[in-house]
Image (cartoon, rainbow, N blue to C red; front, side, top):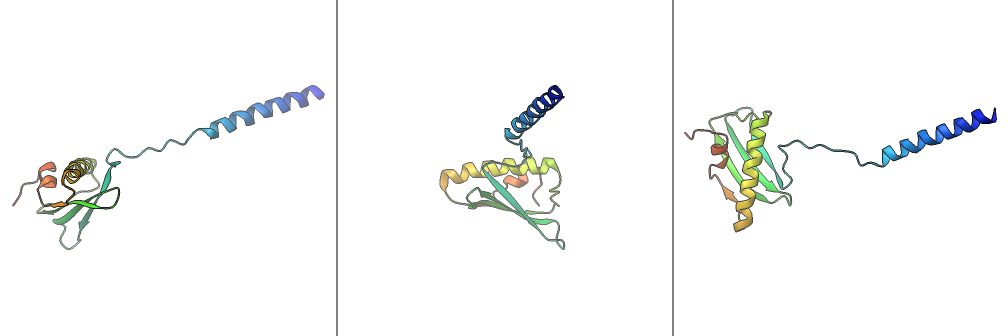
Length: 119
């Protein structure tokens, strides 16, 4: 009887010991590839005029670094390719903003990256 109690106590200690080690590990958080660590972008659209959008790019300090009006095409923001291209424009605009510390506007970076034809 004593041996079974000792075996149960040792077994319980090893089980709970392993459980505490498993909890000590940091949880792995996976962020999508289209999310930049340097800033973020916001797209404004209207349901009545879906072919007109304004895309604004901000750094992590919430400072506007670039904005562009996109006309003549519906931005399909649920598509991964569009998100990756907007991330690319964000990082380009952040580099330009760091050089001159002034927000630029409507230079066609979004249209060129998304292969939109200007009308």
